[in-house]
Image (tube, rainbow, N blue to C red; front, side):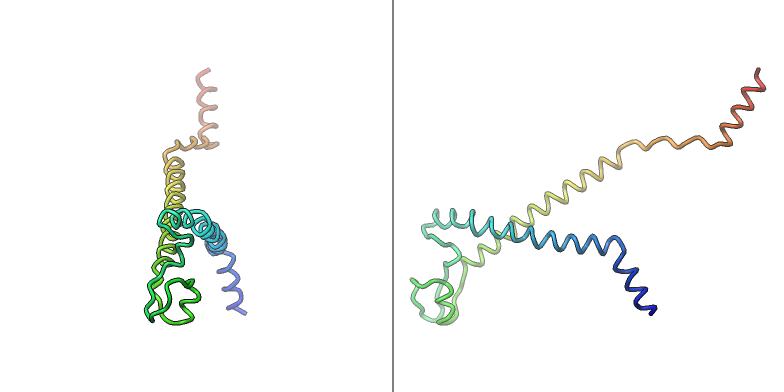
Length: 139
């Protein structure tokens, strides 16, 4: 029973819940970046380089025909899939840059919050009473 209470306090701590939310949002965001890279950026890069699908660029290692798609060539043996690797590297770089910008924004917001002047502390009641007594004595 004690272990269940300990687990409950662990799982309900704010940082664990925040981490879970971050992982879920990160996974969804990763799919958006994957689509951006595969559906928008890489077709343009492939067109510039001269092919239609950059991810299908490979070097055959088992004398496969180079006119096959990457999936078909992999079925026939080992291939050096440099186009797919470059697509994944580009995907990583875009995702890392966006995360960097987000962290930069959060750090900037924290810095501004730290620089903001703190509200003056409320005057304690004892001080107010002493001032009132002083004012009465001065009359």
